[in-house]
Image (tube, rainbow, N blue to C red; front, side, top):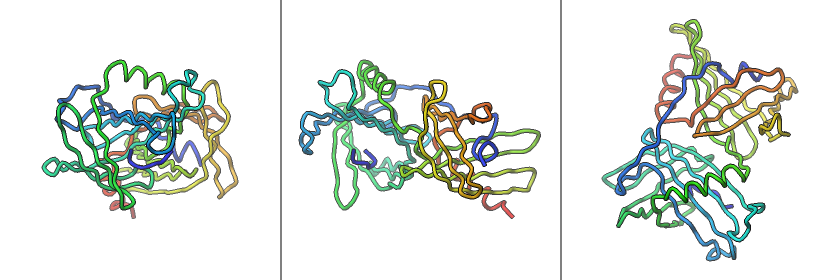
Length: 273
């Protein structure tokens, strides 16, 4: 599938996370916010018999989530379907009808959009080329169909930059976990007490492991001490929940990193001595 826009407990798991929550909301057809869906016949790209659904969700906090579903519609079992979820940050220029996007893995760029008769035309520019597709507001039936795909087709939904924070007895902890497409986990952790701030950063190998109690897992390899740690994970409603398997611990929740989170990290970097 072509990809474009279309140390453990103490390191990556702050306890008692302060969640960023949002609720479903209907938006007018001339607003980019909310869900937009397109169904593409991949036969025009040489994949005869395959279709691709692309669902974009533009959130008001500057986060955009993209879900891709690819397969043959006559395959009722979905055995050979693929699914991919990614999220990033976008900066909207409403007057120019464009937005810049970043943090889709290594992807960044500019897209242009326009509205007509309840549809959105979206043009994405990358690699000196462009692709234009026409999106519509998904129906309830379409969303139910994609929800079934989400439950049936496995995907590496944990990939991306996730942020969380906690407070305990005046000690504030902020953690950014960046799971890359190529099997690396970069963790940046801030500990703030009063006017003092410490910052640690680590990059470790990260691979999917065997299931644990019905949950999918990740194995984290630390080259510093040759340790291997196992985590279980889930992604639901754009919240990543992870927990340590051995020893078992309480779980922690992370939301897709936002522009406000990145500003907070820049502020904390200035506090580090």
